[in-house]
Amino acid sequence: MKRLPLGLIAILLCASCTGDDPEPVDPSETTDPADPSETTDPSDPSEVTQATKTLAVATYNMGLAPGYVPYAAERRDPVVAAVATSTADVICLQEVWFDEDREYVLSQLADSYPHQYSQFEEVESGGDPACTPDEGAPLMECATAAECDSATDLGNCVLTNCVTEYSALGPDCQQCLAANLGLGNMDDIFVACTSGSTEWLYEGRHGAVLLSKQPMTNTQLIPLNSWLIVRPALYAEVDGAQILCTHMSTELGVDYGGDFESYEAEHKDQLDTLIAAMDTNNLGGPQIISGDFNAGPAVGDLSGEWAENYSALDAAGYADANCAADVPFCTWCEANLISNDPVNSAIDHIMVRQASTSAPQRLYDGSVTIESETDGTVEVSLSDHFGMQVDVTWEE
Image (cartoon, rainbow, N blue to C red):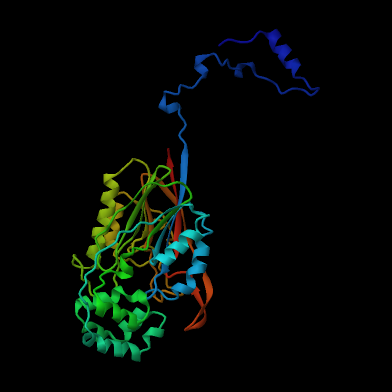
């Protein structure tokens, strides 16, 4: 190694004197930038420092489902305001069913999430009436006597008080009635079903929205096989990560009438479709499947829901930071003031492979006071689900 002459070292030291004693210099630590042994070879992979990236990803079922989830209209403003405070880089929202609600959600969250994706395709429905007035008369009489139109949950009121009358209907009529619960009252529902055959709940809308604080590229809608409710998978790429936002099938309280043996079998087909889509289009970086899965494992104190279906994700290499934690939290919870279900389970997930996932946290598990025309002042949860968020970390 070349060294500077001692006389030159003395001149340099004196030139920087300030009157204070300088820090001692060990000549053996002086390096020559011209010495090739002291430089980094950029072509040597072991010498290249890799950049670490972190993406905060959230999922939340907002429960804006008139006819199915109570107080949808009254909760809309506070639930949207809560999401506007999110710190997540990307958030997958579900159950934003109606066009008016979707436009409101997108406009209110545009400042927080300027990059937005929500695509749906029109679905066909038959034109022949699904019910006849005589066929539906007993159910109408029962629902009127039970005052279901003024009930907080119209569908639950009908199935609780008029299950015999409902079960006597033909399958097409049952399907049409269930598909039109969002109309909110029995008169409008029967007008729709006696004048035509509506086959899809919420006019074929799937209710999913994908939002990002960073640009999204290669967005696309991946359709899933489903009955009565259109089930989606919204795909996007954000900062090198591949993301699917989904809302999969669940038991709907009416006899299954689709192409599979059951709701559970339909759900398994949807899950297989999502895994296959990521396998086929694997870019080598993080792959994330997020949303309301309506399935989860029996872990900790949590009850399982279609746990065998859920296990396919583990077999495909996906990790679940919440369900793998020492104390996993529920997202469908007994403590929820809307769900009215004595079950604690994790059915909302952010599944990650080809990256690390950590720091699971539950979101939007507080309550809000609303004014209801039927029930007056009521304290309710923001939705019938609680949300969740995780960090996804990888080396670029």
